[in-house]
Image (cartoon, rainbow, N blue to C red; front, side, top):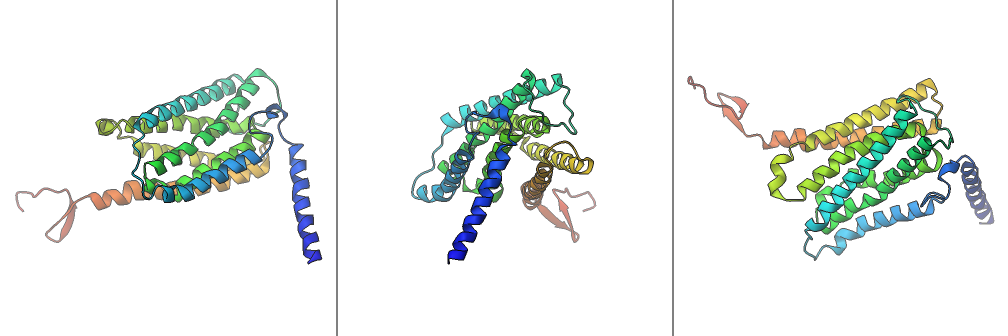
Length: 290
């Protein structure tokens, strides 16, 4: 028993010493920023999020769903504005610095444009905390079909991974996935904000399918970026290149599966078929000969 305790203590001590060593590699520019210095707030908020995901539907079981229209519209439009701000801040600073879209090393430079990028990356990280509200609103409205593994996986991991980003690499190649994803989130939250207005907006919301296509393009591009970084030895933390590749592959599989079920399989099921002379035709009309 004493041997087991000593081994456990040694393993825990080794992990803690490794963590202390990694802190020496963290970016000094974000030191002291809200939620950045310690991983505990991020871990606690993520665990709280998962607790709500687990317990929320149980608490709502005997309650009527809330409409929340008066809250959903300003929330979604505010998130669209925030993501637009992040996207513009990253794009303008990266353009002035002539950042590479293929491989951009992260330098602990205090140039105003570098600080602008670091601040925008922090806001991007913080926005992932705010996005937990997406899930909470689904629960309050009893939209449980939206609480898929993809949804929970996406929200619970992004917040943690971007804490790592803002802690160690708040500039350099980090800017590109944050900028592209923010742009897509402008479109996404605009869509959600408009859809919250009710059936009157349905005819204007034909473009949801293309949001998923844009996301798949985004993930594929990020995957290629990570593979290229590994292949060329891009001057960026190599473990982050590998993490990016693995993470993007998981998203491509999950979002690809969602796309097939939502826009391919479901369309085939909804399309009426008529058997004419032994041949199935979709929405066909009888010819004169028939």
